[in-house]
Length: 258
Image 1 (cartoon, one colour):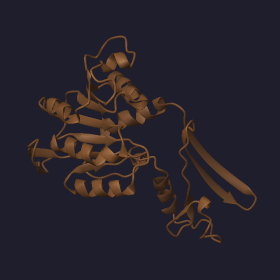
Image 2 (cartoon, rainbow, N blue to C red; image 1 turned 45 degrees about the vertical axis):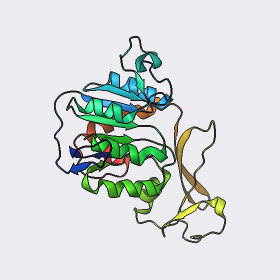
Image 3 (tube, rainbow, N blue to C red; image 1 turned 60 degrees about the vertical axis):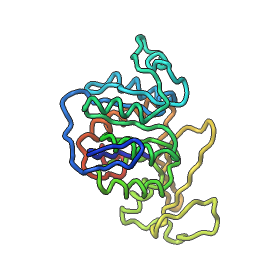
Image 4 (cartoon, helix red, strand yellow; image 1 turned 90 degrees about the vertical axis):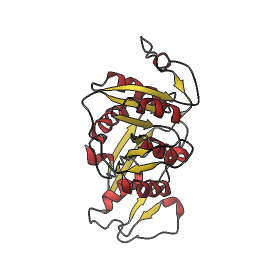
């Protein structure tokens, strides 16, 4: 999974043309942060709606998805009362509507890697920050968004295995010293020159998780973390929403915000 946070203050925006964007930073106001959930009908999207609704200092202001269009997002989340926020399938329309309030706004995107870049660009054009949390995001997309956000403020929390491996590599320890290379693909990609191997599996029914092995002759130390319910992701999401409104630079790795 990866998440992006990006912000620019637009000077002018033309729906059918290119946006003209300046880099003037807008300080967040004291009013509630308005949160738009893109991918709101998904399990993680519904969990995010409930978490934001319960959190102090923020509120759900929009819900976007291609499913359950027109239904109240509160009812879809089995909340006691409707939020009077219908699910819409037009992100641009929702962004335009919320931007009229001039309030500090954050778009939380749970959609698809193929739409991340365009979604972030749209949100940025409307002067909104974006937090993107999607599976299997390509590093090319990360690079493209990094380049795009050279003129913006951006945060990039990620639980990707490559980021964990990079953190291990940066410790200055050489792993697998006597077996630094291998022709056996199933043993995993070797990252850099430190010998850290990365494996990745995506299987139906397999919980999201990370396992780190440290081994020596005759011994193995295992650190394992499994996510069995999306509710466990909500504290990190709420923290990211609170942090992003004051960030002014790119941050790679959610652990750097903890």
